[in-house]
Length: 269
Image 1 (tube, rainbow, N blue to C red):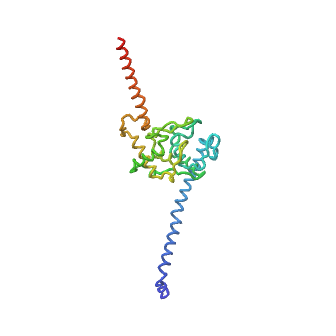
Image 2 (image 1 turned 135 degrees about the horizontal axis):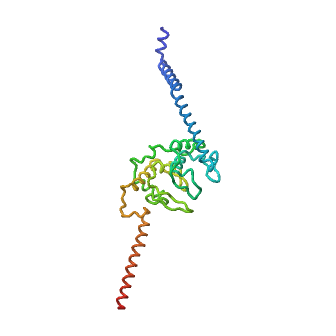
Image 3 (image 1 turned 60 degrees about the vertical axis):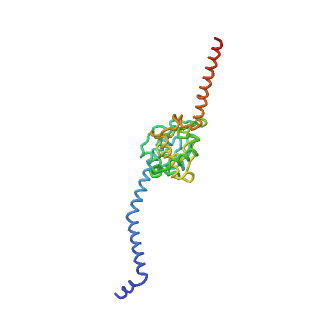
């Protein structure tokens, strides 16, 4: 008893007891909690990839290759990430109905669960942009004014000043951004679908993406008003100037011709 009491009074006794307690706690946690959860997550992910591969074989492999390596009819999907799959399939652009200069948006043919499975399989082929969470693309509290500046500097050249869309070269076009969900706008900026350049977080941080989404929602809401009257397609000052030049100057010319004609007629009479 005296030896045990002496050991308890040893300066390192408390440290040894603490280390033993931590080791026991860590061992019990590793034995019961994470192993089961990790195994369950791994199993669920494996099942999603397996189901996604089945869906891919039926709806995508004919163009993108049996292993996503690509072909003459479709690009490689290795490294595009789950965000690109979610965007393309959720908007109905993929699977494509027919080849062309650009694949248009159409009603999708998959449920969200099937889209997630497809995304899991494509993501397993190579690392790429991950499908964003609601917290990432929710524009609540974002800076609309800064979003307008960012949109005009980076996006208006193709999508016009309020996201009305516009024509590009070789039969391509920038789509109208009205009624596009915040999630899909975020994914488009993240992945750069079709003719659009990609804006990863290193180029356009998450908060700036939210600002752009907030701006588009503000200018395209049912309550938004055009301070100049008719918005003329939202093309900016060029369209207003063209309208004034053609119709304003045209009206003046018409009046001048009318006055000249009536003046000549009066003189002849």
